[in-house]
Length: 301
Ligand SMILES: [Zn+2]
Ligand SMILES: [Zn+2]
Image (cartoon, rainbow, N blue to C red; front, side, top):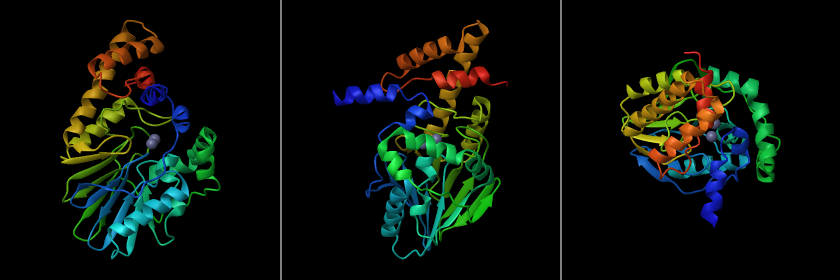
């Protein structure tokens, strides 16, 4: 019965509002190694820890300061001799960014300018929305004040962690406007946020990107030639996840545009495309593409 109710809960995940109501697991102390220099705390979301010879980078914070503090503690345990800690966020949503106040004050916070602007515009609104989602969220997010980054960049920033380089990249708008990707060299590990996921239907929230801009971003990511991919809400995989994401978005887009041309409403098309995806991918936890189909209908390109 437990798995059935879990499936029902997943099927309801069509809006960020529903997302906010999910029970939010606390950030765990356990890590999984993704590549030579990259570890992950698997959860909601997956948090990446990139360890170099002299410094450590954490990507994403977990929901609220208590979780952020756990992530920082795990990072310190992985590399006790690294005294420099960087933090970046894949996008401004609370489970990814609102744990920042739990990190040590000396942490160097870095993110792209567009993501910061989005946070200033919609950050508080998202905190309020997530806080209403559950009593646990409310407690985790109570009193959170989002601070200014120490460093901002437009397209790319390179952080030398000592024998390891983290390339923080903004390639364009997708799930949000300020989606940030981290590419770790020499591992060729991509920390992909919501932009490249594993067996997961894409979702554009609020005034994020469009299906066309998302495809353009994935095309640029393909040029990185990643060997490992760590998404934020699904299982890690190899570089083939990038092509799979492209195929999935194209598939939904092509089907939805054909139905639009036939004069079908966006709601009806959403049901039809979701059913087709369920047949194609019977093993996926959720194939509800209603939201993304709406994004295709609204896309002017
Ligand atoms: Zn998000
Ligand atoms: Zn998220």
